[in-house]
Length: 92
Image (cartoon, rainbow, N blue to C red):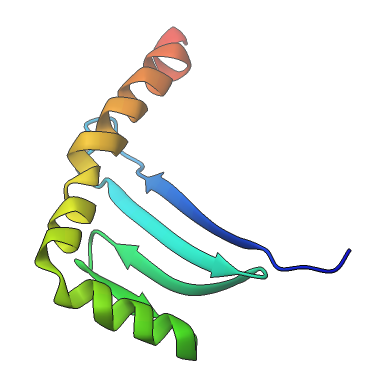
């Protein structure tokens, strides 16, 4: 099938039960190649392709975007991890 495939992915990565090591990752990809990624530990977007570098530079200039992405650890990751953990881990 001919065409293009563009997608974004949000991930929450952690290994402690108190979520103190929670990391939010947001990636923008095109045709299975990650163009750019935000990492809450780094606190900024990083470009991995020529196009991705342009995206990252623009996003990093916008403090509102960076603040929104940084807030996802508390707004998105931890609440969802608590729900998933209470359904799985806490049942053992």
